[in-house]
Length: 338
Image (tube, rainbow, N blue to C red):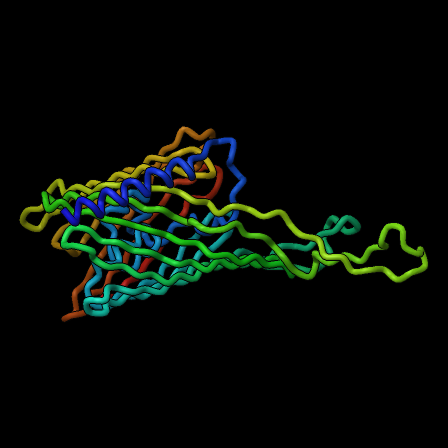
């Protein structure tokens, strides 16, 4: 009965959130802090971002913080992504279980890009100066099993964006639930991502020296501070499931699917599968679809290798994601569990 009450409350909250976050194609480009949307971890990417019900460990910090509760001991991850338009994304995270208290994790994601030439109205070909924008997300995660079938997790995210002398900071929360009915590896999950207040840029270049209207023309200029428009975070609500199709001898096949409702564009459907041999070799594939015009995502593929060294487990994962109009994305991930 306790489990049913927990699930019922979660369904009500998520139903309200879905209607609040519901978006459409007319809202494309109206949300900022897009680095929050960039996925991390080769396993999740290889399955098209569909594995929110089956993700565990450090990768779960991004996909579904409830999955962090599945971690045993300590896990550390580093992930590198050759992203679109000469951008690179680095992600590092550590999770550890603290007895009956639950599992905690810390994470950092940094988006960098090549230097950009500074231009002006007087020098449209460039001033000779360059700048390099940086976008970072620092996270603190807590996850715990509420019952033997229900797990909950929350991540608090600190966002910082820096361009020239201007910057914007903000906070966001991710909430996740998983439910395991105890039948053939079937799992259900629900996630609210990037929920938080609007952000706004500020900095020295918003100060302008102007003549106050109606003042003496010979009086000195006054410094006036202007403000930029605020922008929303790219919030979303996701519902997913995982099903263990095969689990016999040394072979295992898991199917995943996720429906994602966005506040900034059309909704998405994600599908993925993972084949594992002897819990050491993994082959993965996935697909992401949307009825959005000129949607750039699509097919994803990847593989993983795991090696046990006593009580330490090392994992190397790779994934590739087809991307229209840009170079295809590649992800590299290294994990160590102990």
